[in-house]
Image (cartoon, rainbow, N blue to C red; front, side, top):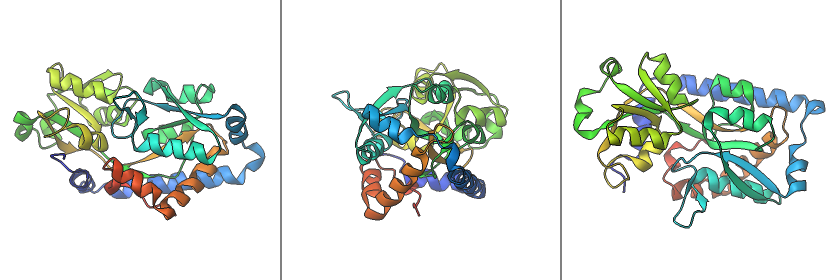
Length: 279
């Protein structure tokens, strides 16, 4: 179905030799979660609050294959399906709210949303602003260019003269900054792809999981392709600091992985190659 399979994209990204960094972030996250579990006296009782209002408010952006709308306008995707299943386990419904990605921490701390569940990279900045779940998917930031120019841009050095579109407040924006690339920040990754397709930007940096669903032959952007993988990273779900929802979700992930429902949802959206075992 896709010209580039997710497995190929992930292999290319992991070949950068940065998997150790990804493992470290997972270890750090687990450590942070354990520290949160040890301070139960300071726990925020979000589970009860969510159950009292009868809904789990989930902050998202339009990000295929994690959170996006089907033809009827219903939010679907791997993250959307898992969020609905988690909400059901709490005895409530999931309500999806589109947010400005750069304001995700503020939306969370202000109580406008209960969690950020949208293919969120577990960066140091994210982990300092939120309680984070255990990582559940591997990912990478990759460069998107027009297919007819791909041969010219196969190394980081070859990218220096390009003008990039990146999602504001994203891991892609951080990679552009870290590599000294020229960029314009846009509202979301979908807009970044539109910029390249329209020719208003030379290239974009987006998540590899999104690229697998939206770039290449048989996709919405069949004249675009990926070239350089810039890093290796992991996805997690964010909650308020001290929230007891974090431990609840980690337990839900373990149960869902053990009974196979997590893998089934991943296969529905073609992200099974990126799934991280939940122990």
